[in-house]
Image (tube, rainbow, N blue to C red; front, side, top):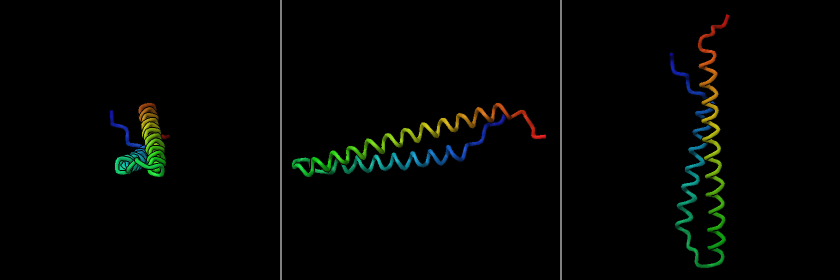
Length: 86
């Protein structure tokens, strides 16, 4: 049995998930570097935490969606592998 090919959509989703994860890491670095002693600095830290949350959730959802797309492509490959177009 041949291995199923990688789905181009799944690969694109994995690349987008990597970009979101890198954005999350950059926001985490910014959070660590910001001072937090004053009111404006605390507000800035809260906004960076929101960026970390949203980019992390986006990375996770995009990765899971890419994984599901690849699973569907694998299932279709296994179901239709023996069929030949007439």
